[in-house]
Every structure is written in structure tokens, then in C-alpha cells.
Length: 200
Image 1 (tube, rainbow, N blue to C red):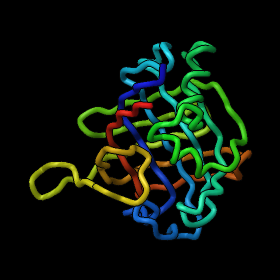
Image 2: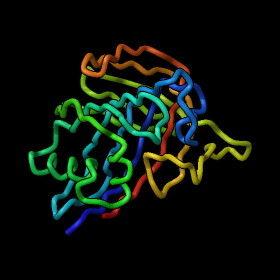
Image 3: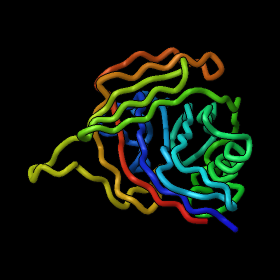
């Protein structure tokens, strides 16, 4: 039956602004660590309604983003039923193909899958994400000369294939994930927002 999901992305990382990973360059400090979170506003996966749920990854990227070898902990919204959790994981692990499958191939190890409360909010352009006790971030997009968000198109890497990305700054990014060796507490680093629509 396949899937069709659409919603919003919030992403932050330890790179400076703008993150070089999106254009295929090496991360600023040699590695990139961050949150990628997708809030599904509307969608079905193999007939299972997953609307209103959020999926997050905390990732460690050991070098150039296109070389893969990412390590990740996956976080599923604790409001998801077992069927909804399975459906979401099937999409974001690439099992169901489609545009997210190429992204999923970059992850060589999923260290753990955890169910946690996830807060995902965007208000007047400002975003906030909280993933259990593991991570939190606050971010806002840059504004261009016309008052519209500063936008990236046609980048070699993207976490929202097929859609433009709005670049910005994270005023706060904290992550404590011993499984990935994370003890992060930074401010004014790279942030990305955007919308997605994935069909597979």
C-alpha cells in the first residue's frame, strides 16, 4: 500500500552557521552531532494513520556526511501505538523505499530505539523540540532582505528530500545521550527548518 506523510522538520547540530554538511563539505569540527525531528501533520503508512506523531533521531556523523557511517538513537513519540511505531520505523529505516530510503542508507548503526514524550512546536517561525530527557533545542530561521526565510535549494544532502530548507540559528541545543557519547550544551549553532512530503 505504501506511504504518504507530510509535516514539518526541525534540525539542529554542532556545526557553525551554516552547516557545511548540507553542501557536501566536512563538518566544522570534523564531526557533526545533532537532532533531526519530523512532525507528521498528516499521513498514512500501509493504511496505518500516523498523523500527529513525531519521530526524532539523535545522530553522530563521524566525518563527511555523504560517506555515511552515522550512529543514531531513534526516538518514537510515546503517543504512538505499537502499529504506528512499526509503521514510522518502516518509513525512516528505508524499508518502504521512497525518498527517505537514500537518507536511511547513511545510518550504519541504530544504537537504540526508545519511546519518549516529544514536544515539537513552531510558533511565529520559532521552533522548539524536546525529546524526553535526552535533548532539547530552540531555533529560529534567518530572514532575507524581502522578509522571507533564507532558503537552501538543490543541496547535495537534505533531510527533507524534494523541499527547500530554511536555515537559521539554534539559541539553545542540549543533548545528554551516553549511548552516543553526547554531552552537548551549545548555543548559536546551525539550525534548519522545513516542510516535507514523502511518498513511497
